Image 1 (tube, rainbow, N blue to C red):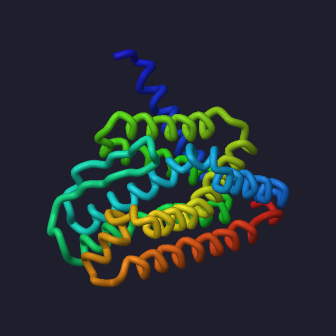
Image 2 (image 1 turned 90 degrees about the vertical axis):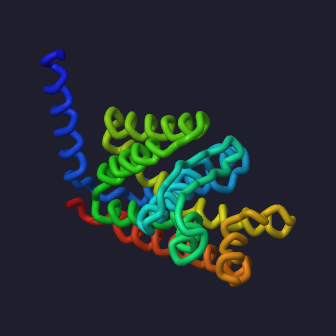
Image 3 (image 1 turned 45 degrees about the vertical axis):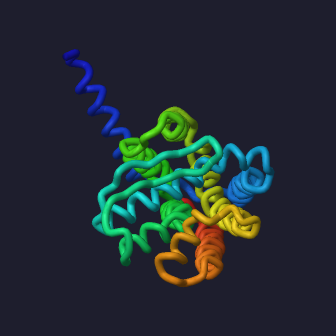
Length: 250
């Protein structure tokens, strides 16, 4: 083994640890608003949304996967498809609280991740948020079971790693904010799309309808719960991020 390799790995690890522990100054109001507008464009402009929605799907399926493991189910794998749909397969009891929790976790997952990122950003840890995203993508990569899913997750991880390692500090902070805003704003749109599919009779295998079969609570009620969770989370995220804008640097 090249003796320089362990040294390089140690240096890289020290760099990541230093980034995670480092606090960045609060962004200006212009940066906060600009990144929020950029995220809204990605969510509301259909051509951009068709591509960027894969990020929401990654978070959605990751939510299913993590919840399945926490509920004691055996995770069989995750698939991501080019139409921005996804599938997480786990083994265990076909009914019961664990199955309900696993199905219920998908749509709120992007909001939960966005809120965790918003908390980190509100405390000045933008680089910690970026490296946490890399870690989550790496863990998900181990469970991907199709080539398109592999491509999407690798691409997302490569972008975040490249920015985290080589970009200027201001660019890192900006990307962390765009990603956080996008998850917070994109989650409610995904729920709206779910209800649109159900209205057209194409959502029989959706999370909401599978939950309805498991719990006898109508699918529309589950959609309403998803909507309340994602919209409420977006509002909370706005409050968290806006509170730090323009604050005195640490």
